[in-house]
Length: 212
Image: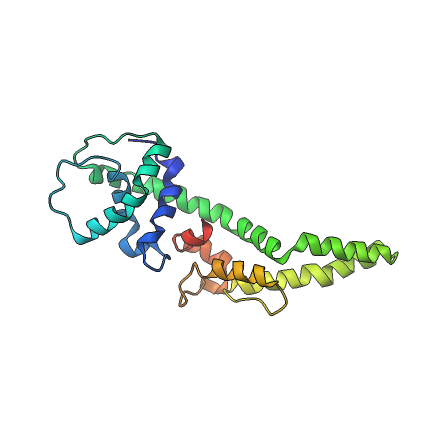
């Protein structure tokens, strides 16, 4: 069997298509999905009778199979009961993916939001403007805090609650990108304790689409 841990999250990303809305692979049960991903790496000797769910999953996996096998440099072999064998790997795969999300989601989101807000550019603009007026360092820092850091943090706070920030906080292009990010979650999905940062720790499986 090819190496699993290094490619587990890539497999999970490909399977986001399984849900027609593109949100949660857990609709089919992650254990079932992962088993089908890995047993689809092998040839079958008992493939005559398939359940509808199995047919659906294999049909979607087939779209990625050729490219995946090429990237993994793996040639399918005949392996009876591959699905049962794959189930043993489920815990390892799940742990790798979810720990990765819990460890890095928050920092990546903050960096992403800073870029959308154009924080560095705005900070530089305020600093240069104040320096041109020969303002002291104290006044420059206070101006940057009020004009850049405070509105940037307010925007991040809105997003953490799954809200779009106030008009004017972001330009049209940035708002469109943020809307794409928030659309990774179903409309009726709410973050526990009204915080995406808390929610990703307690329910990392619900943030696969947004993370990747």
